[in-house]
Length: 224
Image (cartoon, rainbow, N blue to C red; front, top):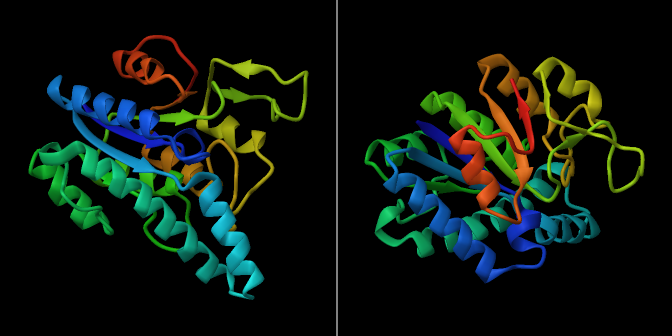
């Protein structure tokens, strides 16, 4: 199975957590050893948003703010690449062609951001489209998708399953902006719906949840 793992920057990098990164590196290696083809995309978390604020303070435009966040996410991805050693690509791919070539060599791909105007959610969706993935699983700082933001509304209810068509209606943001912070960004939702890539959002603080998702067990929220 071809699996795309979206690693929330809030999970591994807010604050930066070596033990959590190590658990994800082990998880990615285990997936590969089980015969799966694996690509991971790592977000920049709160550090990326901090850099965006600094960029805004420097009066930089939206594109340059995005680049600040992209470089942070690539630095996080580089930590994964170093941890993977020979199992990984050796470098962080910065194009879809590089990512596909790495996967074709039987290596574990780990990416950060690609270009301004998209988040790492969209990067994961684009990689999934390019390699014709079977599953995208996101390790998030929430345990699934809710009817409302559970951090703001006590009456928010977790959804076990929903359709991509329903997903777009649950989120406030309808287009990209630097530092956007929602479970799945709007452009990624559009791509995933177009390619019909099964997506699962799980609590990323315990990598066992991602294992369960790959095994097809009921966990988090599944989107089809």
